[in-house]
Length: 435
Image 1 (tube, rainbow, N blue to C red):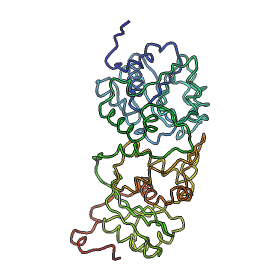
Image 2: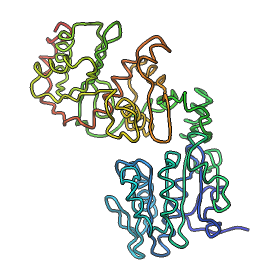
Image 3: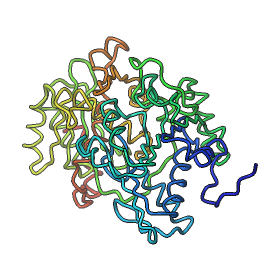
Image 4: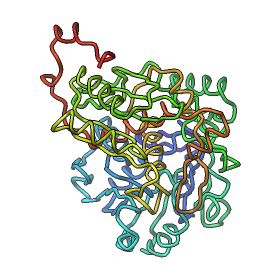
């Protein structure tokens, strides 16, 4: 039987049961690889339902620092394309006629007690549901208890033990659909090309990222895979450059002493590699190097090297020193074992969402794509330590450490002023290598 649907509900055929079987299930699990059309289908269905009658909708993720990290953009693009009668607010979307509301929240940031404020929700959509922990899940399920309420999960499975998958994939009251990009007639050719490239580089990455298969061994997961990073190649981010940052890893004892100047797009502007043990010489050379680019914001790994940071403060009065202590406490201790884990996972998120450009340093990329997630449990993530990496590959990932540290520290960087840089004449005669 042919079903005629409004244009906004033109979704992949495999996902149509989300619409046609809506009244037969309470839970809906759509899982699979990238570009399968899962999020688009759910967003379109929600916008259609909110146009029919007043509904209260919440779109959530386990971790969401801002509305930009949510499905908010998908809704905005659809509303704009189809000229739908919605008011688009900074953190909320409201239907002009039915007064339906769509809100966005991160469960971890809101606090589990605030999850209990979801009692009156008609529809809950949880995107990136592979990240939902059992603890969060155990609160969400009994909280959404309004009569005829619905819960939608969209996910690309991460591990065999993903909490949402284990609880819902085979329940009688859950409609479960698995879909990948090959089954989505709307998948753009450029995404198909990316999938082909990924398949050539790593069949394991292809199976996980594009076919939606879970990783089988959490002990050898890489923070950033080669195909994930190569997807940045050729990307140029078009936004005003308002930040410049020095990032350095002052490793001694035979390891490289690494320094980069990067901008807020993660683009490398300059580099400096030293094999120097004298901390005062390192500090002086680094200040001269940073001055050349007019940089006054420093991100430095100070574990064992606080003397370098203190000397830089003396040589560059008024500088903004962002001290990084990898073994120190994370700002999100429930999620990460230490700051090193938080830094690496933040950088992974920026890379995965293509908010940074390709970094022109083959050795750095090689190091970055060899860092492993040492352990994952239901709460905390730990990253492989430098000592473990040295034992495994006989070298230290100093360039990767400096890079991810810089990407992370850009959050705390002050606006860069062009007037801070030397003039062209001064640049021609100034040799920081002689400092």
